[in-house]
Length: 144
Image (cartoon, rainbow, N blue to C red; front, side, top):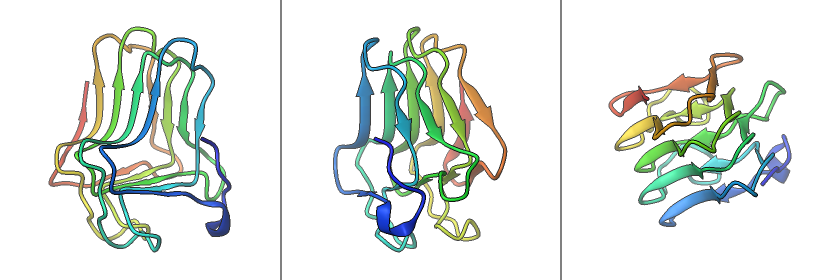
């Protein structure tokens, strides 16, 4: 689900049960870049997905966000921001996203449950705090 790093190329993925779901060991090497997940097109109001903004289930080597300008996602207004589940979800990376904030990164726009939830054996998951992995409260930040 790679999309561009400019506003014209971004997806707005909101108002669903789950925004992005990548499932299964054969679904490997995915990129989720530059999207507004759970917000409106301006990234300043909630239009959340009921359960998850992004859920990775046993899909290895998925990258959510990135270092380049515009590669990070805004993942806000959902139940869970990101859920990473299963022993096969190895090599998953979460980097450069705004989780639980508006697109400005300065206004809370929380996910109602947990910002990033790593569950059931995905032990090779990497969370990188550059260039601005921001997780806003009142949702629980990271639970592993």
